[in-house]
Image (cartoon, rainbow, N blue to C red; front, side, top):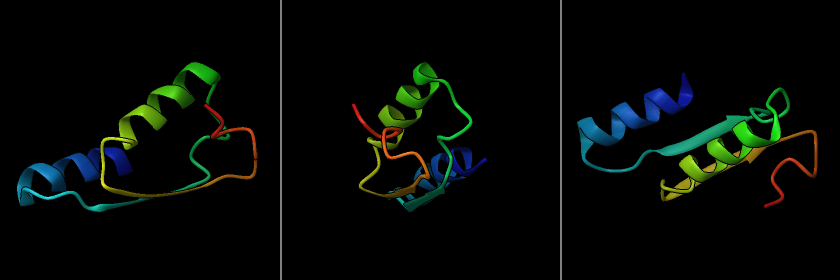
Amino acid sequence: MRLAEASYLRRALGDDPVVLLDDVLSELDARRRRGVLEYIDTFQQTLVTTADPTACAK
């Protein structure tokens, strides 16, 4: 939902919102983690928190 909201705001406002994701990666497998990280990398400002320190490793 947060990513859909960010995409909508990007289109509606013509500018990137700040994307805040709290522990979004913990329930995802490695392929989906990569997909989320690659997608949020297209935004100018993102903040991602996670309880798993290896979750954001590329």
